[in-house]
Amino acid sequence: MTVKLRAEHVFKSFGRTQVLKDVSMDLRDGEIVALIGPSGAGKSTFLRCVNVLEIIDSGRIEVDGELFGYREAGDHLQPLGDKEASLQRSRIGMVFQHFNLFRHMTAVENVAFGPREVLGRDRAEATRQAMDLLARMGLTGREHHYPRQLSGGQQQRVAIARALAMDPSLILLDEPTSALDPELRVEVANVIRDLARERCTMLLATHDIPLVEDIADRVVFMVDGAVVEEGPTEQILRSPVQERTGAFLTKMTSRA
Ligand code: ADP
Ligand code: MG
Image 1 (cartoon, rainbow, N blue to C red):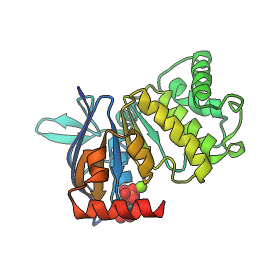
Image 2: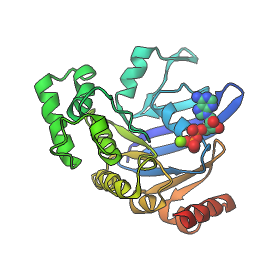
Image 3: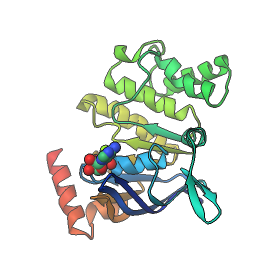
Image 4: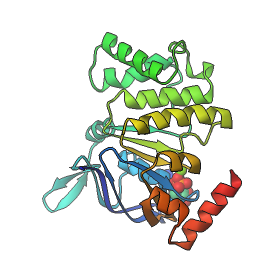
């Protein structure tokens, strides 16, 4: 299977705080990987680096074999300008904890915006595709609602439709169910399960261990900016090697 995402020796600091310390991981095409770990581990920062929302200090990130965030300039690397960075970003679907929809646009406008503005699709085609995606997310009848007229679970499903509308190479989800009440969590988790069944390549940062167990092929456990342990989901969840992994999982599952 081909490698979709390759991160090698990624380092990232904010001021004097080192947030990612030598993070490496691979995702193969069609693979679903869960990124777990305590708050502050660097999960969001890592996803933001892959999506070129942050520029890494050193190391390499490649998506589909292409260097992300930088261009090769002789024997060194040069950060990309805004335009090139946003072009790379458009190939990744990103779903945030707090949905981040455009407040002044309806559901269908939110979903059709990227394809129109970035991919240059015409209005009718982008709208038709957005309506289809919203239907797939169980949002028929809500297409012309504004975010404020939708529940959190509905807003997050619009956000997932918006990510899919760009035909992304890879989908990054940053705690997509964490801001939701339990009953709304289920509807978003179900949509994510459907994507997993279709083998959309996904890197999912989450505290939802049952969802991880259900859909992830592999689990990466991070603490304090570094990968502590990774492996097949079943192995990491049932018989982790590292003590810290076991302690974290015990805490997570007793809290639920
Ligand atoms: P996680 O998603 O695993 O909870 P984050 O990636 O959000 O972790 O944060 C990792 C660490 O980086 C935290 O200590 C956080 O305070 C710090 N951090 C994240 N973003 C910034 C930023 N823009 N400026 C300074 N520190 C940041
Ligand atoms: Mg986070």
